[in-house]
Image (cartoon, rainbow, N blue to C red):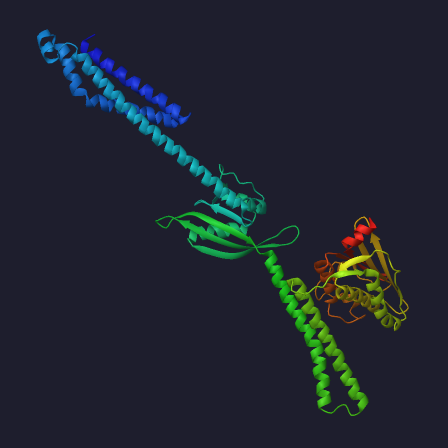
Length: 475
């Protein structure tokens, strides 16, 4: 083997050693990231080649001097010891430059690792934010495949989103109307589309305010489409209730006002020719005005309670005494229909923290309803039960009246709700029982209940917590 070949082999070995060193360093720094290590090794080989070519002229002269075989010329060009010195210097410089390149690549590798960690954290943060949103969020690509969806969307449409396996919207979404809307929005390139969608559920239809938005690139091509579905079922129900409330209030106000206006016109026109007729007309006007006043007062009280603006003056009272006073007020009204009212005996330690006027209104309202819907010669029984363990007292009013149909029982406490089957028995606005419910549950933290059988009678009652002093005494 020629000397020149030996020198080239030695230099190649040096390059390989440098590449091996670079690979070991890369693997150590990247902690097992094979792709980055391979890149570093390739870069090291490239650096070796660059350095080798950089010193090619110098090494070529050395090889040429060895190949000439002239001891005199070689000695003159390279004094003894200078050849090994030059090789050592070139190798040292080569190793220094290689180490510098390796360190640079290691630093770049560290920066890439930090950037990857930052990207992963941002991705996790975005996913956490999306899953915390109560609205359903769906993102599709340019081929109508779901590439992102939060938990609310999966619950709504009954699918489980997997980022590794994009799903076609036809397969994932149960609403064909939404699928059509997404496809049309993407093909038409409309920036924003808003529409209301209704999905049939087992309990009741659910309405969603749906907003579709296109995400475009610089050339106007639709890359992604974002669909956000906001549940507006509750808002629609509230709007419907408001409309019903206004309609009922208008009707209830119109009826007494019409009577007042009619009798007032007859008085003005002189149709009441005698004192008795005048008193009759005035009596009708007065009763209708009182009815109108009660209606307005009930509406205002319900509104104040619901808005939390009503003034409540709570003190400790004996509930038995409140019931006794209420029964005395209703007795004369019951006697007109020959109805017997059985009131309870006083109970020791039945102290409750209440607004006396409000609870009296509750008891009187329930008693008056019992009298209204109980035929002549019927009976009304008022009962109180003290539960020392639970620290509460229950008041029950039982009548032998006409009863309430089963389909109406759950609605008797709704605003303006009246049982159609019993409309002929008594007049009313349908606000009394709702006011009772608001006073007991909202103001006093109790509960109200009703049971009824058509033709046999009804049982209305409410439960109130005992005052802390009473609960302590009864334990």
